[in-house]
Length: 314
Image: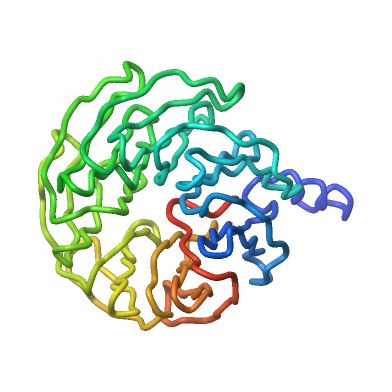
């Protein structure tokens, strides 16, 4: 079937996958967020955000980005298209990890000191409830079926599973030492936890939250992301300046890629091929091609680039 140019253009503009994919990189020491157009791989804007911005979550439904501000005790709301700061929301304590549910209706904010996760309505920003979890909650992610919230409890060496419908804790499982970043596969069957102090990744079967395996990676793994249909796991190793690549079929490390100094946040672009890594000490972002396992670009951002969370909008 052939389309005339105006009709084809309209289809392309209305396709959410093709509409302006952007990476939102928190620069904690600069109090700013760098916005990267992932097609051109250029920084298109830098947004001032006070309070040492750290965590990132993207709400595709509302076209909003949530940035946690640990020193300001809350989070800010950005418009992912106009790149304007829309709102500042107070939570209290030291908010670090931040996530949203798959329907774009709930926002979850982890409080590092209070050992809680606070739940907000994404439309009104009203606080709905506060849930007790383990010590120093950090990374969070929601299951594809929108039923479960998973929380890494760093000091407790555990991952908690929360029933989103009931706002109730269902299960908590021990993992490696000091889990921080976590990621789920696209079916919600496996969860991977990067354990900072034991230099490994714990693989959990989400049915019953049972441990399947432990995979050794580099020094002080911080966060993780999946690419190529979930067949490859990319883990940032802070003290090595590298990213470990794990084959999720064999659960073996198959490559180690040198990136910038102190890599932290990692997230995969909409093409499921290009992996973005925020390098804290080098103040830039490395782009890895998951097909060739090579760094294909380095993008200058701001001081203390962290980007903790799922930071790319589609």
